[in-house]
Length: 115
Ligand code: 5GP
Ligand code: ZN
View 1 (cartoon, rainbow, N blue to C red):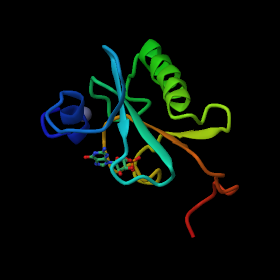
View 2: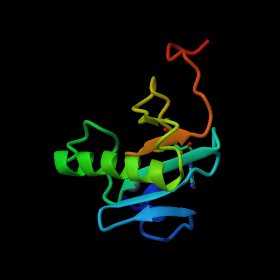
View 3: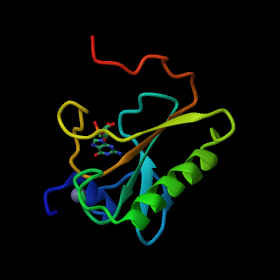
């Protein structure tokens, strides 16, 4: 998609701090990290979010890469969270499928609605 910021990052048209790349996937540091480790894992091809007819092998590969990223960032033993926000209630702000790899601190217990 021509006006998609993550498509531009995947194409190298917008710079990012690269953590991992292969032929289908790229992982880069979030520009506004919420935790000491905050990396985004995205497919190079554009899908809006999970459920947007994402091929199962690609979806599996994204999750496998997320685990690899956690190891690269040194949080695979201490633990981390893998999050993908979908749509308005999910507070997705960039409409290009991405997984957040979040770690380096204890997460809040709560995962309910916003206050
Ligand atoms: P969402 O809210 O859609 O799940 O997450 C989008 C994420 O993308 C946010 O955490 C935001 O900080 C990050 N982000 C937005 N624009 C850019 C950018 O241009 N570069 C990088 N590295 N991250 C971005
Ligand atoms: Zn895109």
